[in-house]
Length: 115
Image (cartoon, helix red, strand yellow):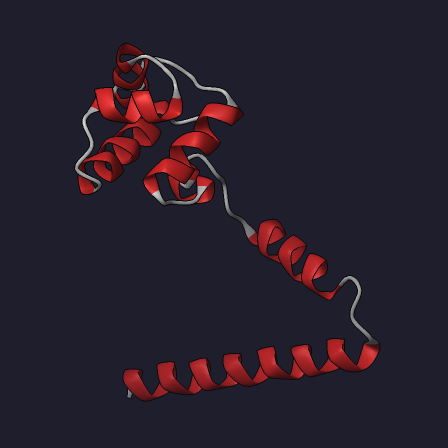
């Protein structure tokens, strides 16, 4: 877990909202010292606190954690599997055809830019 990056992102979002550490702490019912420690990457935080912070700052948890999430091919394949899980064979084929069309277009754009 990259607590420094998380803290930096939290601080940036807090500043965008024009909130002091004290005001943010008050809104999510923690101490301002704790907010400071989180922002400096000195403390971990519970899932509950992370969700409260995300909600208060108007961002998503995945945005706050994106430096800590490893994204590889398996990640994308798992997402595709989840999307396709309860779809009919006809819907799955339509999705596959759409993906093929998108990649054909991307390949064409790339070959044209290399020419």
